[in-house]
Length: 408
Image (cartoon, rainbow, N blue to C red; front, side, top):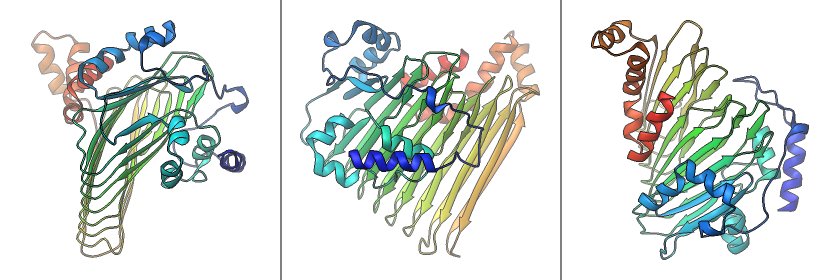
């Protein structure tokens, strides 16, 4: 691992920032690259630092754990501080640091296999500095009846957080994994550069739901990718409400025949925010299907962009892909753009792409106001209605939280 980190660091120094998307201006010499207690995670909140416990309690994380989650992992700054999992035969759910020590052979089989450290500047930085994150293994013929959740919190200015998450859903199994992200508001730059690798086995299902509400001084630059075996299904549910800059494109490699994948995402950019998000679907197997639904909102001077790639390879005959991008602009000082790349390399497959960009519907807004609703409340209702497809994909508790965040 030491050699891997050193090689990653060398590659980080060689690589430039992405040539596309928002401008990235990070003073790497001014970042704090690790902050933690250097202690193993506790399975009891009574043993967690009082300030840290109160932070997660105020965020509603402890209440959610008690109500509807099968297992939780909470990371504060650079380390997992609390971890608890109900007893389940064969399921592994640990911090990635612990998994490296307890299951080295399984770890080595999947680590840096799907997302290589030298792909871009920030996968290289993650490779050099990774700490925390979740390692999950679901054995064959196992249906996890309630979600597993990880929550990531930054409370230090100028902090870089570099978690590494690896999820393996073995054949004929299912998992719903939920991720939450928040940070305190500072006037100085912080960086979140996580990496996620997901392996979905034959006839298995994985759902990955996330709502990031980073503060506006956070650069959110992450790489997330899943690979699907025969008959597998992967679903990304991706909400981007916070951060100053986001570059995030959850990806699926549909390797196995008859595999399916979907991505439904929402981005709401306000003043001081440039959210560049989307999805990537790479069809390799025959009779594979993918769906991308991207909804974005730009208001108060924000910029919200869709950027995506769909490729149906030569041998992926009988495949079908559909992309639908809906964007609304709330005022005259905001912007929204769509940057699709669609490639079909055989004549026996179908790809459909639909994109709309429009201003808020004044007629509908005036109708709501005619019922005695204020203009701000009417805009809230309009935006929440626009996001209805996305909210349906979330657990009820998260949909309620999303409503609260939008209204704020």
